[in-house]
Length: 145
Image (tube, rainbow, N blue to C red; front, side, top):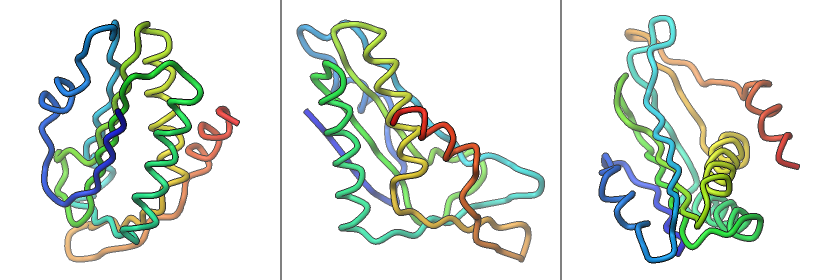
């Protein structure tokens, strides 16, 4: 089961994790990203091209399933304006064994940061600026090639 969602609304992490519980699954690894307060950031805004972003996230989940034994994988990414402290992304991988679940979860979040077509704007008070891609994100994603 692959579940990929792009939405403006908050998500329920507990409900998403419960959806991955099934016979034969011995481990579920998850990551929840929050809007962090980097030096004066009060909010962020994410824009995307819906069909392109959906296809990109779906391809990442499918690749994870082909690399590891994953009966289930979930990616939920929010778009729109979000305040500091709000959840922005949820990634989870379910597998019979913890090592596969942990590796798949790390792969999904690392590659999502570079492969998914999102554009981020940071707000600091009344000013806003688009954020450039980070070399550190590219380096982490390259480790999975």
